[in-house]
Image (cartoon, rainbow, N blue to C red; front, side):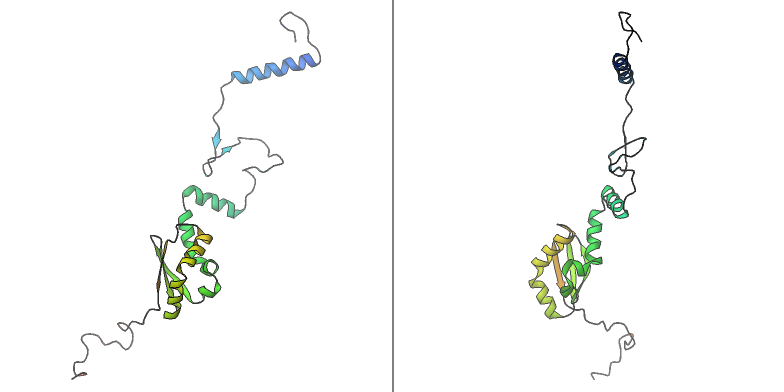
Amino acid sequence: MADEAGNEKTGPELARAAVEAALAKRRAQPRRKAVTDPATGEPRRRRGYTGPGPDPRDPQPFGTLLERMMKARGWQKPKAEATVFGEWERVVGADIAAHCRPIKLEDGELTVEAESTAWATQLRMLAGRLIARIAGEVGHNVVKKLHIQGPSTPSWSRGPMRVRGRGPRDTYG
């Protein structure tokens, strides 16, 4: 390889000239647009082998992939609401969970049914602590208010002892 003056290059000069020529050729080529991962929005490498560090193409634990998918689709709030029902004992504690159960969650208001009126009164006094505990476990603004009710009474409108229609009229004579 010769320079502009016609001198032959050898050794390190020749190597340096070859590297500079390759860099100039690469700079002249148009750059390709980076490909992004649709689930995370992070740039993705096109080809090659993984290095010694972590790579997005490495096998991932299922929980990590599930968390990433829920975040990408905006399912954090429904997941937190489902955690209140599915993990009730862990969220409020075993003692409280043994005496009450969640009924419904609408617009941030959780309805809880206690096993007795005494437990309903106790839960009403602990409502602030319960909301703070739920917020610590599943996230803030999932449960904003607690509606605590006592045990539901049995319904006599259905069952084997029900008399259809107006019933006998001579009972109270």
